[in-house]
Image (cartoon, rainbow, N blue to C red; front, side, top):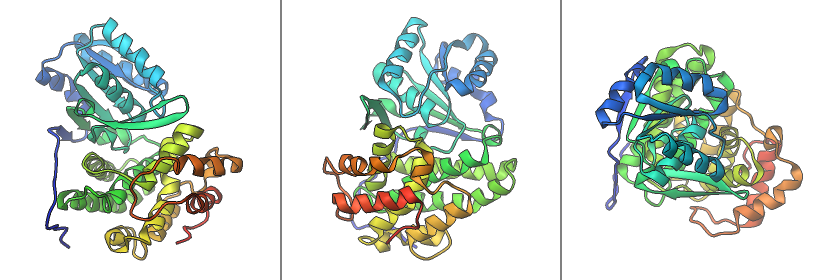
Length: 357
């Protein structure tokens, strides 16, 4: 099928991307390629040991390690990391991990304009975008800036081979969300739509293989390929209802990022499918046929993804407030948004029911 549009604008960032099992071992050469000599290695506390291993491998190229990356990129953590980067005179950021670590690297780059290399260990896809989401005083906001775009990405299937299956599935569905919303974005163009469909098809084909055999490096590589495509799309077009809801639930209620995306996705897509069924038809086709929202829910269920917001920590008493926050400020969406409609959507997602539309 063709995604040709009579008029469109397309923008692509200059990013160096390398794929391959073991490509992480070329990190030193990539640092040299940029002309840097003092790398700050970032990670979450849980991946501190991995960050130290990277630092040891880099030898004299490593100036230090900061293992304080946190979910939803709290501003206070970012400011502490910036202080540390300046103290050690870092001239490049190396983020090793998932969305939390990548987000911290972007936050440092936004404040210092240091170059970034990202070595992803999940499928979040944020490494492929110039978008930074930050949380301060219980609210998550996003910005887009060229300084935030990483210069180099190293996709190493060996690094995700031990990612637990549950985290693999939720991280993958997080990436799929970028592609699904991109299909109806106002800024969509033929390239973004083609990349979105290819990314979803990669996940649809490879994720079941990973669930069946997590050590399958070929399948892991294809899921990383899907993550890169979906992330690239996220960097080219704007998002709408799904991402707004997930930012509300994550930033204001502390829900885990990938799990929230996985649960909300079928409901948000079903909500918007009433307005743009033709644009979302490729989603249904990629994930088994039928309406897009229903197909995503079936696929998520088959992959063992979480289906209920109450199971990841949201209280039923918070649903009214979540609907209120999500509809406070106007934003574009293909289907009309009102508080009652969003409240019904959240109720279905809270209880783990199939999408209502």
